[in-house]
Image (cartoon, rainbow, N blue to C red; front, side, top):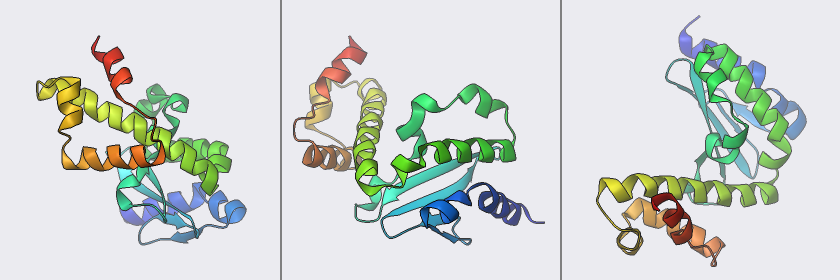
Length: 172
């Protein structure tokens, strides 16, 4: 069986609960589960792991987010780094299954999406500020276009959000 077909069969096997319990449809060509509100794409990552990206169909494409940004505190990377592909597919399916009530409900997903995008933005800033030898203010006042998209989106959804304090903690 070709590797791609085997990967798709494993995805179908371990993520079937999305179809059975949450009324998602599975697209085999894209390894994507979809319902009217949410898409969940699953792809192979570095031969032994997977990437799960989720997004609300009503939001811009750039808000597609890796499950790691949403559930990082629940992921044991020591286990993942030792596992083979099928073990990691099973690990992530169990993680998604445990959190499906949050990740498949549009209102709940909107809240954690915003938190995940904030974490991602801060992480990007933490990398860019020293690499480009910028102050926090310089970075925030002259954001690269993709960073600005995230920043503007987050500020639209949460006008009181300010990354400055969190960035100051990191660079103190």
